[in-house]
Amino acid sequence: MKAITLLAVAAMLLVETFGTKASVGGSMSFMLVFVLVVLAVAIYEAWSHQRGATGWIVNLFASLLGGLVAVALIGMGMEALLPHLHLEGSLASSQHPLKYVLVAAIAICMVLGSWMPLWAVNRFRH
Image (cartoon, rainbow, N blue to C red; front, side, top):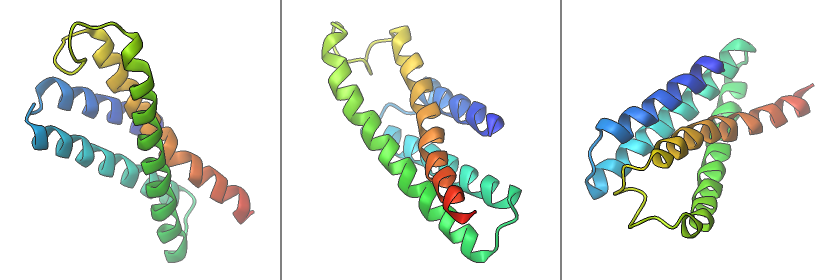
């Protein structure tokens, strides 16, 4: 799980640094990273616990649902936080170091949001 988290942070930072800044391309790049992170978490958990076909399906749906909830909560948190930063314009257009810290935090929250439902499902399995 640590490797998945580190790779998610690296992928998000690389997309933010070198990715496209276009309106659609940037969002789609972040969504691609999101999908890959959710799949990696679900597959890793299913593979490491030697789940059957039903377990793999449950893992994929639980991880996807948790990841989507985490991204939604991150969005709401960012909306509440940004007015208090007093930036000269938007955070996306500025090259403020906080931008990269937030991108790394978003990647960590995506992994945690994807993993927490799997943890809860595993509690009910035993």
